[in-house]
Image (cartoon, rainbow, N blue to C red; front, side, top):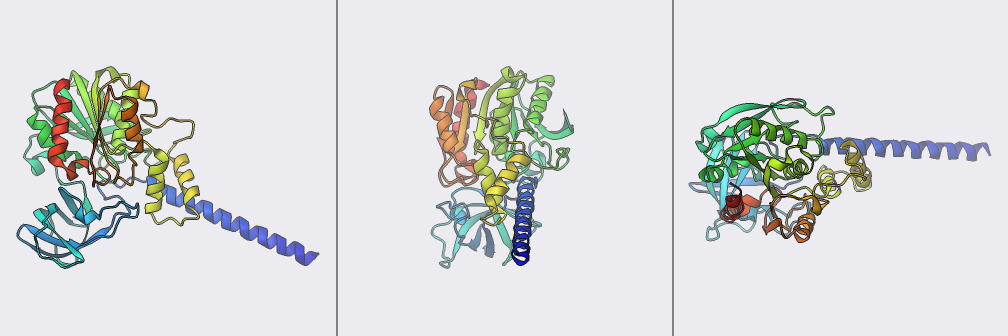
Length: 385
């Protein structure tokens, strides 16, 4: 009897130990997935090797499909992208279909090497963040460095002035920084629209959130609200919110909750995060979380981010929309599935326009088709100026 009792106690202790280890592992994975890494590519994306460069071209590894199962290889995606590595940044254009190459490589147009050098063997990530620096150094656009009073402290932003009194407030998303929205700044400047490009809590130079974690826009939207207040105090009559990824979720939240929502004339949502559970699962899985721990880690991430089951995700109530919305999204986004975007557009065809962008990764709708993106944006913004 004593032996059986001792054995049962040992088994119970072991099981408790395994359970505690699983909980600790889930908590660690959840915090890692939610911890902001401003300006660094999202985890899980395939890394490519530089094989060689020549004037106007770079030879890269032919990548494998991403962990999310996107049907197109990242190295073959159409359009314009950044190549990112520690100490290195370059800009590449489309694949050069007629160029000679080995079966396991791809040749893309090399548009610029903006930092460092693309030496053979350099491991790089294809990223939608094309520009480094600030609007003046990267684009030749005059701008002012401004501080926006936020609830946690001063939020740095770039203001690019222009003639109209409708301002566009740009809000980056996961795996990027306020340098990402510079891809649309030249277009917006040609339309004579002032741009306020925001760095929010957790970004470099901005205050940290109290727990040091990101919340997929659920608390960060209040920094967008602060940017709206700043714009209205400094000459804007109305604003358009243009957000990517979680920045798009923040824009929707501001339209739903801000006391100044009546001064928002439109929303542009690029790769919006509208399904918390799916995005958190993708973020946690990208950290190579063991499959047995994954459900617990996702649950822990939801709790840590304050995304309780009784809270509605952004855009969950299509009837609450009051302004025109332009959504850029597509089926190859494995971080923020486009199903909720399709449902939102179907529920409010009077206000929501969905522009489907194929063969584009998360946050890369402009990159895949710059001309088409900007034409859709022009048509949307013209009545709102």
